Image (cartoon, rainbow, N blue to C red; front, side, top):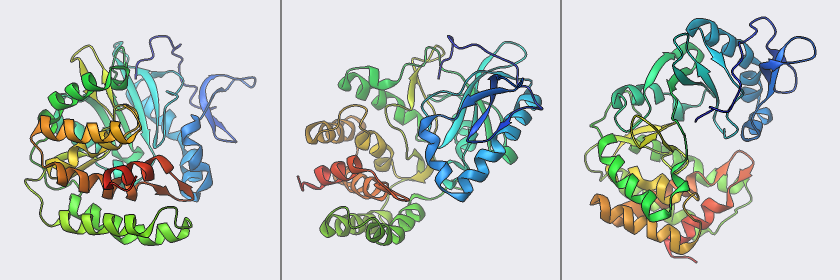
Length: 322
């Protein structure tokens, strides 16, 4: 999330739009400023809502630049559900402008950042709900947590998470409601994708989600996408969380993304080590963590016409089916 080596250029408000998924920040042949959409966002071109969002991006970017007086640089290359660009405010403050793809998972990201108020997470500097735009603190140097050896990275997580687990309710989506949606969608997604994993794994995930949803502990602010690429080295604090996808749920769910994520190693031993280390270090019920991890990881293993085989492998390892 650092861009100290990138040139910052003013937005040309009247010449941002380009066909083919391009938008403006750098000088083009016709006087427009253009830059490619990051590869990770390529999937949005395959769905009507995604193409509409791409078409709207130049206007959204221009509007934010004008509203907040920003100078912006080329987008950060890592992107999957939003466009993030390094930005500089009129007073020289370095920030990140984030334009969200309008999905429900990130609907309350700004609210979560506001609740945390910079404690363990990046500060929210400004928010335009109509544009689904956030202006947030930039992490410098921005090195991802997975640059550390795995056990050191897990130590950081054990220190961070209790600070983020604040009591939570509305407007955050309850984990039980989210889990009910996964259970409803998973069988049909599995069929459409050609049954990419065994039926007994699907049944196990459905059973665990049903059992866990109604027997949760205290509801706190949890982040369903807290993997080791979403914790960055910073100056104000050693490490800060970015890009939360918040829910209100029990603490055992709060480590699932770190167990699931491949950034700290993708093998049966690595996944099980993360499960045990985080559960023990945070005083969590390891079997509840395992159940949530199987359920959400399998729910996130199919997206549209894409099958994420690493998630299926992780769910198998957690279920002991390897």
